[in-house]
Figure 1 (cartoon, one colour):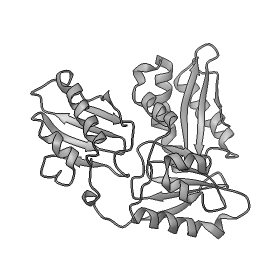
Figure 2 (figure 1 turned 180 degrees about the vertical axis):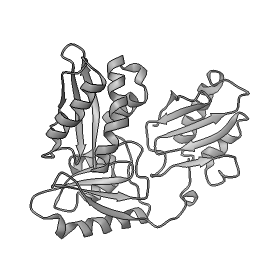
Figure 3 (figure 1 turned 30 degrees about the vertical axis):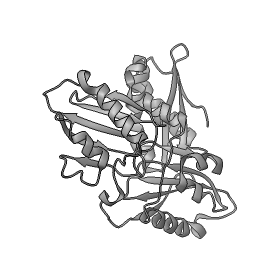
Figure 4 (figure 1 turned 90 degrees about the vertical axis):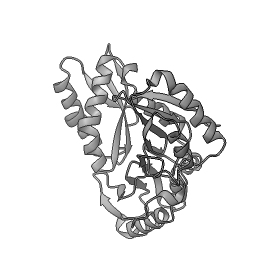
Amino acid sequence: MSTISIQETTNNTIIKFVSSSILINGGSYEFNNIDEAKNAPLVQQLFYLPFVKKVFVTANFIAIQKYDIVEWTDVQEEVREQIEKAINNNVAVVTESTEKKKAIEVYAEVTPNPSVMKFGTNKSLTTTDVECKNIDEANTTSPLAQELFLFPFVKEVFISENYVSITKFDMVEWNDIYSEIRNFIRNYLQENKTIIKELPKEEVDAKSNETTPEDLDETSAKIVSILDEYIKPAVASDGGNIAFRSYDEESKVVSVILQGACSGCPSSTVTLKNGIETMLKEMLPNKISEVVAING
């Protein structure tokens, strides 16, 4: 059974209704009126509410912008219940025919980690990073990762917004296999198969923490902001991710998690110390003693 939670945004006219289950298979959609939503049954229902101005749908949340005729505090619980009831009654959020058909492109990029290759695509894959260390994890979260693990040389799979990072075993060289993997991913996406079917609980919790900085102490919130603005775009270009885990106020130690190409990368320690740690120390003077990777 799916549950819907309410999440405020920086725009007081927009509220996000976050789902505990996957709503659509990749991509995102914006609807400006009921006519545009003719192939989106749940979105059509929402436009019958007189205060709904726009609806934005992603894999795990529906964001609604309202007209000024009401306040969200007066109607948000009613909307939350309506969305939750519809989803649990199997009302489709967006039907497949709504998705704009376009050619799927997949390109392979080397990363600083010789065991990892990044496969970028022009299709949105997920709104929340998903990491699968083995096929058992993939069985519960990602059908795409599950099928990738059927290749005997695939060791780990990391799926981000518009790329898949794959870690291989040392038994093969990338030159011999990258073309096969690239073609497989492109064909999989072209067939519009399910990419993510369920977010791991820890991923859901992590996402929740990222979007509610008010739950963090002041220094932790600043660290998250710096990582999001300055660090993550750089490591994402190399097929990796660095996620904030905790900050110890006494020891001033920042703990992070390395994912994708960053995990197990020979140069990740140098990046961590000379790049991230140095930047945090400069931007938050006297607040940071060390940055450590708890899985590094």
